Length: 396
Length: 127
Image (cartoon, rainbow over all chains, first blue to last red):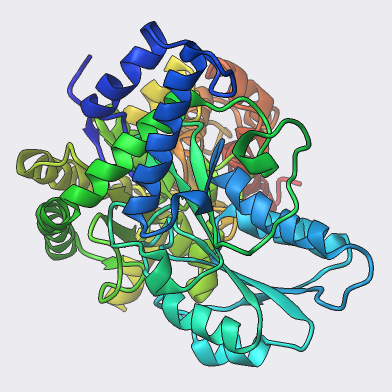
């Protein structure tokens, strides 16, 4: 295959070789069902429980607090839906608080619950994408039962104060769910330090397999399962385990957490170089999000006067993979709700490109990306009516 | 990623008739930043009603750029009455088709072309 510069690691990461190695025996040799009592089953059961311990250790949880599932969307749905289902009919805790920059799996689930009679507050963010804890305090009602907030935003990389949010939630006897999908492997995730009741993670964001996630449920907390069936995962998530995905996730999270300090130092230097070169060498560019408080792997940059899908296509043809907040590349033709929440400027959303670095990032590829980006911006601006208008106004 | 035809990609990579032309006597813009596509068409129409020259400026996605390029190529040298009959569907067909989601939001060049010609006709009392 041609050499690709993969800068879309917030979308997904490739499976790392150590994970492939760890899962191979469960593809070729050990084919039992972990629920079976015979040796074939027991071998696999041991591997699943070993992975559960690896995941628990990585986020400072107890293994009994880890429940494997299929993906982060399932994890997020399980919390929001499971919470509301568990309420039954006669409860006053019908108010949920989320942020306006949540992942669609939280946002759209909250939207759906609203239509079903629940009340939802969507906390706003400022122009840098920051949340206000005062807004959170003001949003709390006697009927608030659940607060769901992300730890790291997937589009702009902002880190949110989940510890403070948990503290505020618990002062009011409210449950707190953290969507930590974009945090694991990039910043430390410690459920005891955060203090949250629920936390969602997904393996394919840290070089594990797609279709494999986990939910942390603090001991003593109960969520009504979305599925009914067998006794797997203590009946909280029935269905035969995705053994390969689970074993892979255990290995992947162990390595991600172990390598975090050195790997994030390396990647943040490359990210900073990419960002500072683009800002310095391409006019009319700016960072979207909060540069003082974000993950080391990501920069979201808007390229004024040109549109994101055009940029994405040009980069793609030059062997570089990125993503955009532009409506034109999304299937629903809506501009990014995250960037719109920052300042409501559709042009900025349409012009934004997310570069998310990962293990494969190196200096040569970063410098190549800057060069391609320079040519791309120049070419697309050469026939942009918005740019032309801007230049005409400058002259007058 | 959106799947574009080879023809779309070819026009996107090498758009024809870009920029502004000298002595344009008909200009029109359609679209807005909200939806993410803005297309501006420049025409030079001679006294016989022939499109002598045409160019475009586009802020938009790959489909917006390719349809703009294709539209200008299709109508260059054409009589304005014939150019008014060129539809966005024909533009899409010439490009070997467009993804359904791109058919309306990004395929605006024919509309810009018609708007420019109609304004030209009003200006020169041709209606």
